[in-house]
Length: 266
Image (spheres, rainbow, N blue to C red):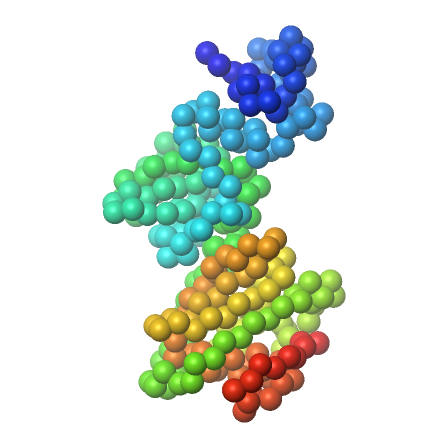
């Protein structure tokens, strides 16, 4: 049977002379893998990919994978964190779930029970998976409830089409705190919603926030390591409130809608 180290050698990641090294190959494959990682010969992602090949399963890099937030939300955050799993896509009644340990039958059974779907496991690197779970489950419940509250308060008309783009979040992150995030405008839903969006972006080390009105919904995307990730959607009717709030925070003219403006949150 092919070993994990042999797969890494066949892929050209580990030198072939490691085949005869006791530190790389031995009775305990886990110790062999730990030795390779400690020597810097392989990365955790390469090991996870090799494990997937050994198990005959697909491997996904979640940072670049277009996860549908509505699919990720099919499993509660508590369950996702407990088992270390994250739904990443759905086709019909088949749900693809990213896992570190696809042999965890308890986790798979729980996924089937909660979603009432057929579950197919794919493998992901552990740190990558934990980061994705944090990204998609951190404040979804509060954002969803705020979206509903704001939708009830918003005007029924679609309003003027506008968009907002917040960049330079690294400067906010470097300070450790920001009046733009903390605010002092009571606990109005629109203020809390915007503060949550910015707080999430800071925690995810996002460089930009893209707030994009669509025909039926307001889409929020974060740019993380140069890649745009869809994070949240909200009813289209709250767009004017969100954009006005961002304009106030950035100290720009809330009445001007015809030309682009630059502002700064301090």
